Amino acid sequence: MISTNERSTTGTNKKISVIMGVYNQNNFRILFDAVNSILNQTYSNFEFLIYNDGSNPEVSEELLRLSGLDKRIRILSSAENHGLAYALTVSYTHLTLPTILL
Image 1: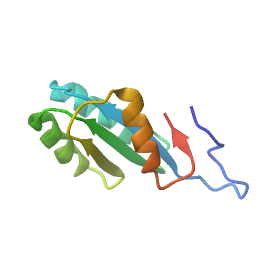
Image 2: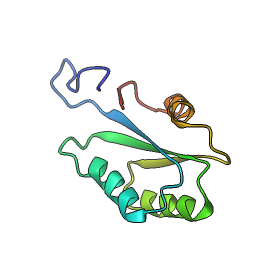
Image 3: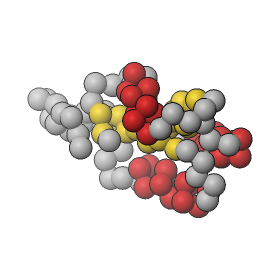
């Protein structure tokens, strides 16, 4: 869902925000594929916030590694798990852009 149109009134592409919550996804192939599925979209003008919701140290380390793959990725972290709704709400407060993609 995109909360506003992808194109501004001048016809240029608007930058959007993509939010993803992660909690203990120990299968790094699935995690890598999920991140790449966002990064490889044809619409590429976005910031990508990944909320690490209290994952174990191995998953936390993998998320940091993945964030080094693309400058659009930002990692937010919590020391303990609060659930997806909390993760999305906290991520929303850290957006730098007015348009959101969930």
